[in-house]
Amino acid sequence: GNFRIATTTGNTWDESSLNNLYVLNEDLEIVGSVENLAEGERIYSTRFIGDRAFMVTFRQVDPLYVIDLADEENPEVLGYLKVTGYSSYLHPYDEDHIIGVGQEADENGRTTGVKISLFDVSDVANPEEVGKYTVDEGIWSYSEALYDHKAFLFDREKNLLVIPVSLAEIN
Image (cartoon, rainbow, N blue to C red; front, side, top):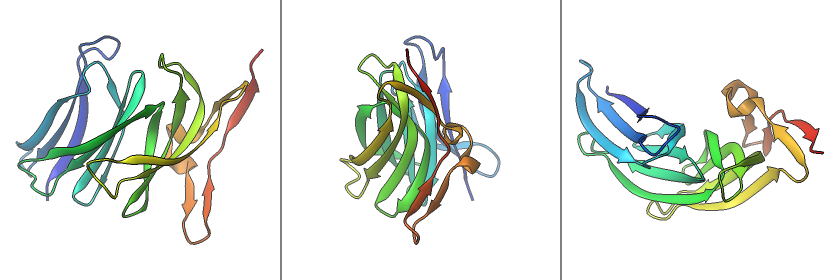
């Protein structure tokens, strides 16, 4: 019955940006919030699953936040994980795992290629990246799945994950 929204405010190109998650009632009044997350970064993806939100912000590293929404008037960050790169699309695998599709990045935040991650969120205070695959060695890579969820195909029963990837050699 409530509307949940994640926002980035301020200038996303400098240290003034802030990220927020709001819960609004049917009259669009704010009834709960988590504000001022990841100063100087911007949101790349958010996925709401049941009483949880998973939010990815990025500037140089990718914090994956796990946010509890069970008490909609008092949402709270339960835990987070910092890894290189970012996920611009999050997809549930099962109740304890999230698939992330995005870009790997170096320690300076420079993106280096397509990255698929598997996050274990069973311990909400300490989420983990338990697997990853990157397309970034000596080639430039891009996927439509970074910006279009329709370019992402996942069938758990068939153990199948498909995304289109474009490649180009780096000279």
